[in-house]
Length: 285
Image 1 (cartoon, rainbow, N blue to C red):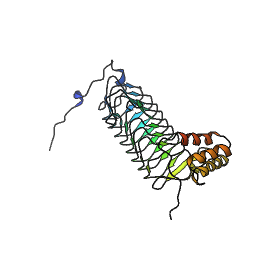
Image 2: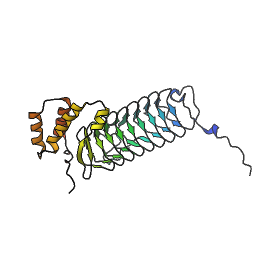
Image 3: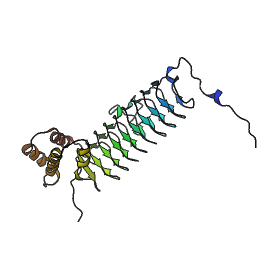
Image 4: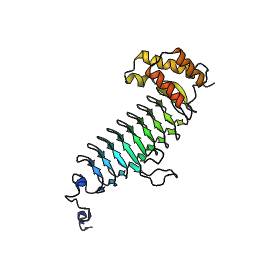
């Protein structure tokens, strides 16, 4: 059966000389609000929606069907895959429409169907650092702060006001409770429920979430030497393997171990923990 050829191009919005933000768009099937600030060499694929009050810096690629909403700031050389939604309003009943942002650093990859919500009045912004990888279906809720060089595995769900420090790795299907703090260089096993703070340099697993050793492989990859790794292990022996409560363990660490950046980072993390740190390792009977 013969069908007439229909030309729909005349229905698409025209790109005018006055609209500098759209002049280098690769796809006329995308929608970019005239007030969005898009660097000239940003690649925008078909069916993308970019709202007003959005800033996207040079070298970034926005995949088809991604939605970038008001208040989003995306750095240089990022890669946003199809179906991602960045800058949606928080899923928080206390949100009253205040002006807030999502801020994403440079060279971060956001895979398919990731959702990142704006901040609330609590902190004003949600932050994802540079050189991060957020795998497919990850959710980052309002007011979270994700450090640099973090990896968050497929379908992990990060509740509001969570802090995840640099070089942390969360495997797939991890659920992190609101207000939790995950320290730097941490490795959390897949399917974990993170209800307590996870101090730096450790591996965390089991149910309930427990200390299962120092993340020695990750530390070696980041050029920590054996002597430094042994020092970190000694700190955690006081915290988790000597039968001391946290207060007594910290006193012993400060009295018996020489000061170092790593020792002091762990001490400050435990002292400042509001939810309490995760439990120690107890072998199954």
